Amino acid sequence: MVNPEHLAAVMAVATGGAVALPYSVTGLRYLTVDADRRAVMRRGWFIRATWRRTAARIGLVQTDHAAKVGADIPLAGELRRSSDKPRVLIPRIAVRVEAWGLRIDVRTVGRIGLGELQAASSYLADAWRVPQVRVEQDRPGVVRLRALLRDPLTVPTRYEPDASAPVDLASWPVGRDADGQEVTIRSSGVSGVVLAGLAGFGKTSFLNTRFCQLAPSPAVQFVLIDGKGGPDYDDLFARAWLYSKDDLDQVHAVLSKVHRLMLLRQGGIASVLGVKNVWHLGPSEAWPLVVVVVDEAHTFFNETKTDKARDKVTGEITRMVEELVRKGRNVGIQTILATQKATGDAIPTRIRDNCQAAVSFAQRTSEASVAALGADIAEYPEAHPRRLQHPDYIGVASMVVEGRPGFTLVRTPRTEDDTAARLAADTAHLVSDPLALIEYQTRGLHAVEDDTAA
Ligand SMILES: Nc1ncnc2c1ncn2[C@@H]1O[C@H](COP(=O)(O)OP(=O)(O)OP(=O)(O)O)[C@@H](O)[C@H]1O
Image 1: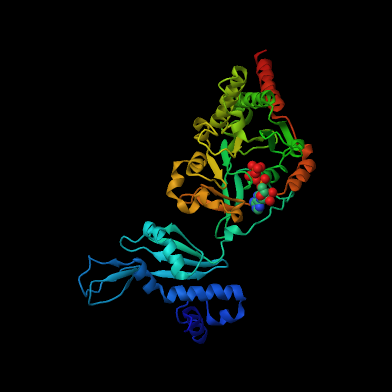
Image 2: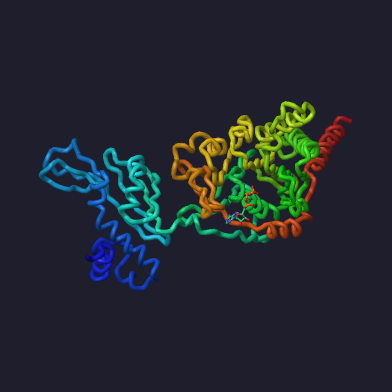
């Protein structure tokens, strides 16, 4: 028996691509590309050539009750199947070849839209003989399907720091999406970030990458708190203004300083900078962005209910972190809370709900995913962190990206500990004390006021 996929290929080559071919692809091109690409192209022709049949079998057709039988009403995005029976509308498709598979834009028709295509995705994968079909709304009236022969998110990438490149403090490049597009999330005006995920799925590497992006800038100072208490951060401490491991009193002392910095900055920002929000000017060496990383943050929020002295300290730490997240935005303090704890109380909701950004690597349960990303994630099964438990998805995270609907899966680059350690040593001379700075800046101002008064 003739394999229909190969038949489509032969026809396409013979006719110079005129039959069942996306217009951007020609039969000639088929002869010049490599075997992987040819396989993708053949699958594309097959999908195109069999679409009417596939749509009908899966139920992705709509009987047009609005049209008169036999009437000839031109409607965008619809193919007429017959002119003498009730009109059966089949969504129109456009197929494009990508390195990883096929991109198929489906024009919605009647009640066939995002929900129906999502529900049909596994049937489409079977009909097209591809491991996975992803579905998302591209724009009103168009749903984008990705028939993945190979999931681009499973291809690891590596971060190469470039200490000479200018550092953009307003945005945060996080990685690449399923289309290979660069994804950035906002950093300006962000005072709180939740970073969650199962152990071993890439949180530390993600933080290493962020550290490497920011460390070359003298307009950034770090506060590093490691709730694990292990050696993970030892090498990075060289580039930190303040740091601590899991000793509760030390953590309390560190956060007290940051909290005092926030209060002094709030009192002094208008007179020192002439604006009420540092992001109007952008952070600078004279008013650096202070990035507070609290790894295994849940360690410091847990109450024992039995050890009163410890619970008092924990309570104060929780209050200070909550205030940093709630009020640190305009004065340039950004707190990143990382946790692998998978329950709703890992980070108190009153802190989590004030964080403007949330990133989650793989999670085992819905509860953990909701705890990290909020209840909306339930509506986006495509980007659900539960989907990421396979080892191929180590380093892939789900997050909200401004300007995109729902949640986006992002392949984050891997940054080795050694790379971050080297950069920390190379940039250690950039450490300064923003608390001493603001004390000096505001004391200076009082002195001027006093002089004037005298
Ligand atoms: N972005 C990535 N791309 C590819 N592999 C990665 C990526 N990030 C991490 N890995 C691999 O996964 C391993 C664990 O990563 P990492 O230490 O960042 O995880 P983690 O979530 O911080 O775990 P833990 O909470 O136990 O520290 C790394 O040693 C590396 O081999």
